[in-house]
Image 1 (cartoon, one colour):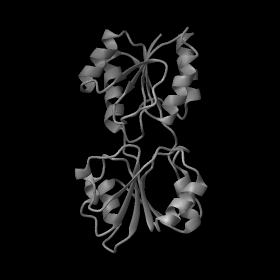
Image 2 (cartoon, rainbow, N blue to C red):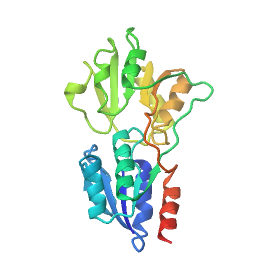
Image 3 (tube, rainbow, N blue to C red):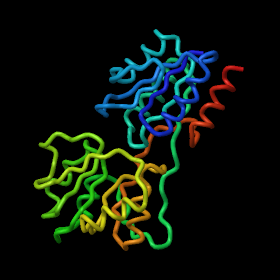
Image 4 (cartoon, rainbow, N blue to C red):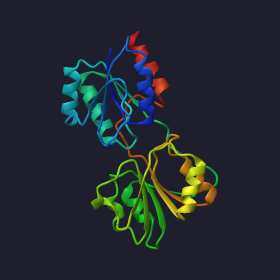
Length: 247
């Protein structure tokens, strides 16, 4: 069975590992957007870069005789997920989305939930604060005029300097992170508030537990809406779905 995996997440990497053991059943191509400069590549066929919108993806699926697509992209990669829904419908290809559950607040959390990055920037207010930004390197423009804050941006790759709010300090790091390390970082940098996206999963969840322990506020950007698709929560369920198709 020819399978395309739209990857880039922890769940995608777990799925790659399982698929590497089942080359007797599946001929897999992994597609990565190219957003990360040094991605961890699986021992499978890999393509990097976009398809050229819905039409390009549909044409690729048809030309490569793909029978199933696994969308294991980031919960905020809405455009790619929407393109996958449309292209698979047009090409009559089965589609499954792997989407980890989002985070939910617990007792002791001090979250401010907002719908998008501009609302997150607005929620910071104008009183100077020490802010840990963990929103990636592409969504920084709304913070340019968000007030005279002290910014610490943590991301995997350095962003275009033109996107950074004035005076931003960079911390280049890749998860997973642990609670002790996160608490030490927040104390050392004297952080007042964290701004983050509701990515879900365990790789970066420790910052929320550390913020809770220290009594810090968290501005949480909710997930955007995406076109509906059959969905599972993890790589194990995705592998079971694929195996059921091959029977």
